[in-house]
Structure formats: C-alpha cells, structure tokens
Length: 112
Image 1 (tube, rainbow, N blue to C red):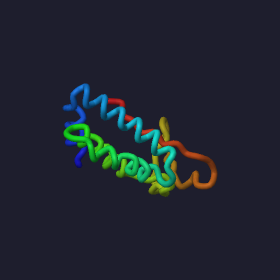
Image 2: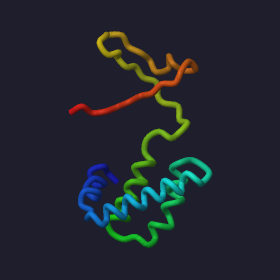
Image 3: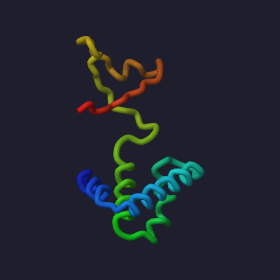
C-alpha cells in the first residue's frame, strides 16, 4: 500500500475508529514484547487474531501500519555505507569510519 493511500485511510477514520486503532496498537505492542523472536514478526503474530473480527477503516489502518513496519532496515541489519558533510564545514565523514569504535546515532528530520 502506498503512503498516500495509508495516510488517506488514517485521516478518514472517525474518532471512534481512531480510538479503536490506537487501543489495538497499544495492545499489540505490549503483547509483542512478551513474545520471542524479531519485533515485526511478534507484532504480526499478535495482530493476526485481532484482524479476523475487524471491518472497515480500523482493519485497513492496522494492515497498512503492519505493511509500513515491514519496510526499511530490520534490527541487526548492517546499514549501507555513506558520506555526510559535517555541519559548518566542507569535511565529509564516512559511516564506516566509526565501525568497531563507538555507537552512532543518526537522526533525520524535516525542518520545513
């Protein structure tokens, strides 16, 4: 499901649907912490029985959230190497230069 479609579903939900969606997500996250295995797989396992009884936007939104969570890197994946320019300088830093030295936190955001 495309991001625009997922956003449309989430924005068209009634307050009651939105509350139900949030409640189920909280339950799934709490339940998944107690299950063994990888986080996304645990969430899918916790979600599956709940989807059976759901209809409409809540089901679509939960399915879309699960699909979104499956995109991108997984815990333990090695990130691709890349360069970033240091702020206030022309110097570039390569991610791989930190390997085995110290933890690296990458924070991405939009300031628009």
